[in-house]
Structures are given as C-alpha cells and as structure tokens.
Length: 576
Image 1 (cartoon, rainbow, N blue to C red):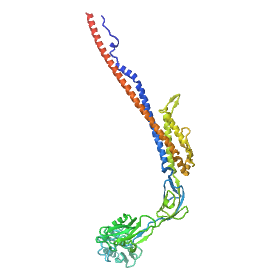
Image 2 (image 1 turned 60 degrees about the horizontal axis):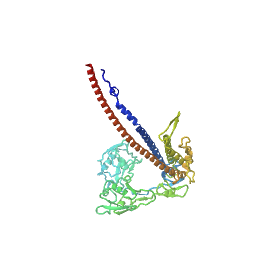
Image 3 (image 1 turned 135 degrees about the vertical axis):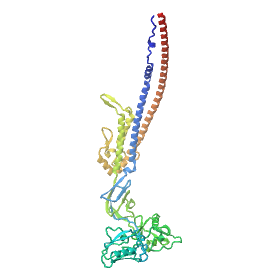
Image 4 (image 1 turned 90 degrees about the vertical axis):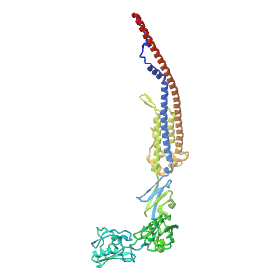
C-alpha cells in the first residue's frame, strides 16, 4: 500500500514567513513614509525660512548703521598743502573752506633759575686734597689718558686734582701751569711761552677736559667755560652743596613753599633735590621743575601754554631762594605767548593753546592743532567714503535677501519638465520680495531737498533681477559730497524716511517669518504624533502576524510528525 502523502503548506518546510511579515508591514507602513516625507519637507521649509529671517536681520542691521550719527554727519578735513598741522572735525561740523593764518604760536611761561646755585668743587684754591673721584662736577671724571700739546698723560681716579696739574706741567716741560680759583670755581691753563695750548687727541680715553669744561681756543690761556661745581641731587637738601645756606626751617628741618597757590612741604634732612623736584611735579601746581646740571640751575615751566603767570613763594624757610628761582634770588620769569591767528582774513584771534577750537574761532566741530607760523587753507568736507560704505552695505544686504527669496521660490522648466524650489508654493514669501522692492522704489514725501528717492542717488533696480545697483556712481558721489544733509533727511526723517519705513516693514515681516516657522514646527509635532500612533499599530500588527505564523509553524511541525508516524506505521503493516 502506498504511503499517505500530505501536500501543500505542510510539505513546504522552507516557507519564509518572516519575509511575508516584513512585506505586509511595509505595505501597511506606506502612510508613515508619506508622513515622514511631509515632515522632511516642513523641516526644509523651516530651514529656508530661517535663512530668510537671518538675511532680513542683516538687512535691518545695515539700516541701523545708516541711522548712526557718525554716518551722514561725519566730516573729513584736508589741507591745501603738505602739512604737519593736525586737524579733526566732529559730527555735524560746518562744511566749507577756512584759511588759517598763524602769526604766533602759543608757548609756555617759565621761570629760569639763577645759574651756579651749588658750591664750587673746592672751598679754597688748594686742590691737593681733592681726588678726581670726589669732584662735585656735572659729569663724573673717568680714568685713562689725556693729551696736552701732544704729550700723553695717564691719570687715575685716586689722583688729586693738584697731582694732575703737576703731571701736565711735567709733561709740557714746565710750559703749562694749571690752577684752580675758588672765587670763580674754574680751572685755568696758562702757557709760559704764550703759545697756543692744544688739548686732547683722538685716542684719549679720559673725559678730564670735558668734565672741567676746558676747550681749545687757539691762545695760550684756556679757562673753564663755566663754574664747575653742581648740586648733589641724590644727597639730602642739607648736604646737597647749595651755595646759599638753608635757613628758616623748624628744628626738625621742616619747611614749605607755594607754587601757584599749592603748598608743598619738605624736610632738609630727608628730602633730596631729586625727590623735591618729583614732589613739585606731582603736587598739582601745573608746572614741571627740572635741574640743569650743565648750568647748575633749576628751571620751572608751566605745563600748559599761554600767557599765564607763575607764583613762587617761600612760606617756611628759604629753599626756593636758595634754589635761585625767586625773583629776589635772581630767578627770571618769562611770560608765555598766546597763539595769534586769523580765519578767512578776519580779525586777529588769540588762543592760549596751539589747538585752535570752535570756542576760539567759532567754526562748529573743527579743531586745528598748529605747530608752524604759516597760512594754510583747510577744507571741511562730508565724509563721503563712510556714507558710501554704509549705503553699499545696505544695497548688498538688500540684494542678498532678494537672491535668497528668488532661490527658494523659483520654478523652472527644462525640456518640458517643471522643477520647483522648497518655497515655490509660498505666495507670502514671494510677496515679501515684491514689497521690499516697492519700498525701495517709493519717493519719500514731504522733503524739499535734492534727494527724495534712491534714483536721485544714482541707485536703481537691475531690470533683469530686481536687485539694486549703483547705476550712476558720479551722481551718488556728488549727492554725498554736496548735499549730505539732503541725503540724511531722505534716509532718516522720522516715521516717513526711507530707513523708518523699510525697518518697520522688516520688523513685521520677520515676525511673519517666525510665525510660519512656528506653524511648520507645530505641524511637524502633529505629524510626529500621527507617525507614533501608526507605528504602534504596525508594531502590534507585526506582533500578531508573528505570533500567528509561529503557531502555524508549530501546527505544521506537529502535522509533519503525525504524517511521518502514519507513513511509517502503514508502510510497516503493508510490508508484512
């Protein structure tokens, strides 16, 4: 007897039910794919709208730059000749040509102290005990070689001044005698033969002659050109070597004086010439005090120029008198000069400073710092470069936005095939570009000047792209240079000016752009919910199908086992 055969599903042990499940789920998942495509499109639209929003903010920024006070009111100053004068102009300075004729520069008033306020290098004519290292001269002596009448002499800092005098006499065979006079504080070289004395050689290494202020004069007698002694600026006032004794201080050495009404205190036992000068300069008296070691004098100069006075007076003690700066002690006061000048041939004007400001010459916003007594013509002009740069930036940002709108909304046809862009169906976005073009083209009403619309500045639309371009650069340059006030009114008139209207429109449009993005993001959130719901259904469907096929497989396996059992049983019986 032939065996029983179970055909069909039970015999197809290779059935791929998992693939069947995947295919069924894929078919049922098509709505999710469609929703994801819609979501992707919305996301791309949001990105495109965000780019437009950024471009609009850039355009708003360029309008804000035009609003800056430093744009249309900016001024530049040029001179008719190469000049070392420094001229500046502030915002809104009056345009025009101004001829400045400087007759006198401003100078500082100063008090020149009497010379030789320090003691001499020796109290007596005898300098045998005075070593070179201890000379109270303006410059310290150095050891080395020196030459007199061709004869070289070597000296050391331990040598006394007298020993150097003796060496000079010996080297010249007794012809030249050197002496020191305490009365004049000078050294004198005398030739016994009355032949011209020749001091120095190119290979000398000591500065002895310059320290003693000795120089060739072509005669047989050479003397120091000035007194040799100077103050010891690092020593205390009491021991600084002042020729005039310090008196009138209290028992502790405290004293005081005034400069321009400012009281300055000192102590002769602790303060030095150097610290005293620093105190004067920092006291707020408006002066600078210095010590000139070459002439051994103190000079006091006003910090500011102009014909102003200087008040100097000892209060306690006689320090200023000892320093030789008071009139009674020989100090000489020199008045400062005011600057004198004319503008455009007008009356002579005076300025305490060499910086001639509007307070003096009356030209609003113009400041001129002069340093020569010359005549120069200054031209105050509008800063066309700054204005043109700001306007060009606006044009660039305007065109960038228009290009972005064009790119994101264009529809093209190639060989009968229509291609769209991400925002091709967005009529509102297309309207933004058109509205901006309208605002840019409109006339600003109510103006009486030469500039009422962009084409009065030589700016117009490119007929093929709808973008702005400077079609007449000369017209723009002329308007900026000759009529900056008219240009400013065109752009900046409150509420009705070009900037105000366009800025307001952009503010509204940016808000609309943000609203569109918000709506699209909300739509995507809704789509996410729908996708999640459908996905849960698909997951459930997959689970049901999977379980059903698993049970089917189990049933198939059981049926196959029974089939095998029956086959084996009947086959065995038949064979018996």
